[in-house]
Length: 479
Ligand code: 4AD
Ligand code: MG
Image 1 (cartoon, rainbow, N blue to C red):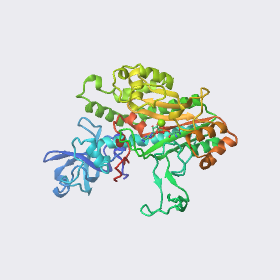
Image 2 (cartoon, rainbow, N blue to C red):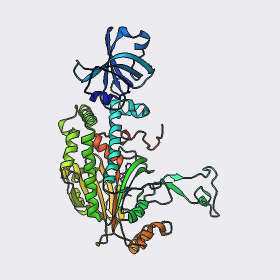
Image 3 (tube, protein in one colour):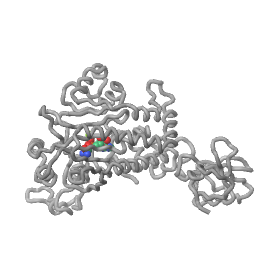
Image 4 (cartoon, rainbow, N blue to C red):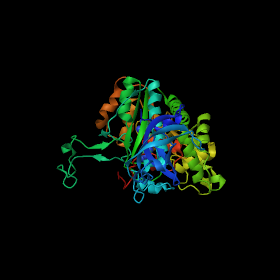
């Protein structure tokens, strides 16, 4: 007899056969004669109901069937008489594989706060909510590979340890084997990284883009998908110190092709979520409604599934930074002093509050902003003829704000060198990168999708710490 998952059993169409299933007890209810166990094994949000005639089993066993205990059940699968489930198992054999002392097991069948569950991140997988979130996370990761594979992209593994700073923001974690208390010093008293493991100062990568470009300028279409590290001290609901980024890079694509790719890619992922994660999304949608039921109607979010369908159906608004600044400058919240960061001049960087105003209030749809001032963007972006802006593009989403950042890349060696010089980016360290511009240079473009930002949007969760199994944030690296 084959052991089946709860998901398989719930899809079964033939009954009255003996089956075996293993999982964890969600709840147990009933009376002296008969008990109903809700059993879950993580294969689906739904539980299998196990019916236990108490007389059949020693009290020694049934007593140990408590929330969180691991069980092996053998029994007969029957069509269910009760409402709420299609089938159930009439237990014939019951084995407690692992007890979960109700006095000590923290995850009890009641509502726990997200904060409490973050402190118990090692056990939060056991809740319905985190089961749903991590099944959706898996489905989205798989869909990303599927999308690019079907379109001829090569999955390129770029290094995590690097000596370069792709974004030039300097928010990097140092990787070293030097003794922090007594590092070797140079004659001028600086730390001598020539004596370090790699013979130079190295960091954890902030982006795989620079290496990705090298791949694209030979393989044509590549993507990376891996962990990314930023030591920015922003304790927000949208930032992690370790997050996952997806970075496609395509030779011969200009900024317009890049925008088309980003929009098609995001819509594909949302479509897959709706198709393949229907049960989990349904659960997440109901959770969100429950969470917000006491708020005034105007402050409640759109139903999660309707929101996803809506984004799928509408073309993203595309406009230049300069137009966005005009809209923001004349907006009500700006005039009434409601923005924490007032928009008073061309050239300011946009904050989350500005991005969300454009998306949620002004256009009421996702927005792709292009042609940002060169001074607030990285050195590698294509310089526009106006001499002030670059061919950057940020995709802004409701709730999450920036979900994608990308650009067309500067393909002219001279222009790139001039910009690096202006910004103090040392060309000698990036000689390998510049070789793509020296030999067979061509127009190319790419972008980075923050995987957890996508998951915030798809699951409707409000805090990025709740869509990654073990969040890394300032002062927090437990588990
Ligand atoms: O806009 P960013 O910094 O772009 C790059 O790194 C480019 N090299 C990408 C490229 O063109 N290949 O980051 C890309 C995305 C952001 O839009 C955001 O979604 C996400 O990565 N992101 C973060 N997500 C979570 N926590 C953080 N600290 C993040 N920083 C960026
Ligand atoms: Mg960005």
